Length: 337
Ligand code: UT7
Image (cartoon, rainbow, N blue to C red; front, side):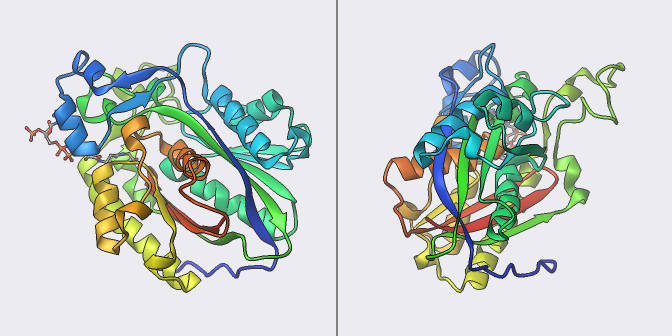
């Protein structure tokens, strides 16, 4: 792994003060998909662990899902929207080319005192966002930050491609970080990586400067996500194992100190294979991909919200968030709740 400087844990901590999530009501089951492409519930379940995913309906967008997740997080943190100082949204399915989805969300929730921006790191968007907000809050520049991971992947999914359409779903998750000058709670360590040479493995080539949709596209399917699933699978396992080992070493922790490992919900087989290599027991690996499929940047904050609200993690627990995705990008956060 290349050099990544250790982030000194400052005295001032960025603590998780609240979480929220929002997924569309509309369910797309494996059975439903068998009517669209040549596949089976058995194939999808055994290869991915996915049973259902949620699909945004007309009127539901990345910003509306984000805004609802943010309202739920504000309620959980017992804060008002106008107290929020910074909004970061990780997404590859933004509301528009510009302005940012974060600006739409700022307006929708009434966070008039915040500055707001999106970041593009595919499935690593939320862990990248948390790393950035961590720096601003722990340095003392801001008192709090709202970090969101949100996607409407169904809008860039090719439902004629059975290799990819079975994977993706829509949703949003939000976390509010708040500064604390005492105690050991908060983000202990963040680490982020990318390798642009791997861009071909996962991308959506249209809509940008290289292939504008205003000009005839070489292939109309360029408006959809293109994935090389096999390549992503193997690289993801390797990088996630590296990330976990780095986090444990830098924080001087053992696997047994991690109360819950919350990986990006990419494929249950990938998660299980990583868990086995690292000796995590099943009860300390969080998996909800069966319900929501792969929601890219939204998957970790949705999982974290479910984990907290279902009582699977408690105050004082140390959790480990790890993501890998398009870019290629990968990163992790170690947090004491
Ligand atoms: O979060 C980042 C984005 N996520 C990813 O990039 C996903 C990572 N990769 C994966 O999760 C897995 O690679 C997949 C689930 C996408 C595919 O699983 P796999 O075990 O790697 O299957 P494969 O692509 O090697 O395909 C095996 C066979 C092929 O048939 P042949 O060539 O062996 O006859 C495929 O045509 O399975 C076939 N196949 C399907 N069969 C039934 C591919 N998709 C389907 C399908 N239903 N939906």
